[in-house]
Length: 84
Image 1: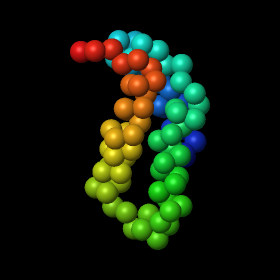
Image 2 (image 1 turned 30 degrees about the horizontal axis):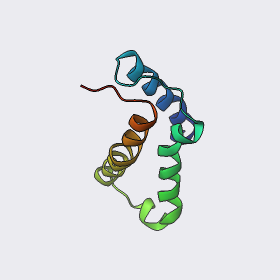
Image 3 (image 1 turned 90 degrees about the vertical axis):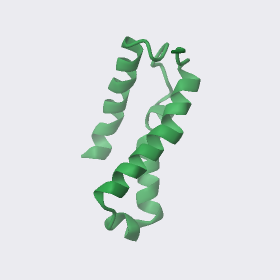
């Protein structure tokens, strides 16, 4: 369920960021919008045994790393983050 709804959810977040003035546009390639989902899939495939025993704290840490260290810097670079 998460994997099927995440791209639409992320697109909505990007459009809201534009509405708040945090980004200049949300016209990003699908590959960029889907990147967090693709990285989650990669992590699940890369270490299926470790993934099956991941706890909530580790899951939140993984999500935060993907969003804060990879996705947000990328969309800010591509979508022209506004200063401030």
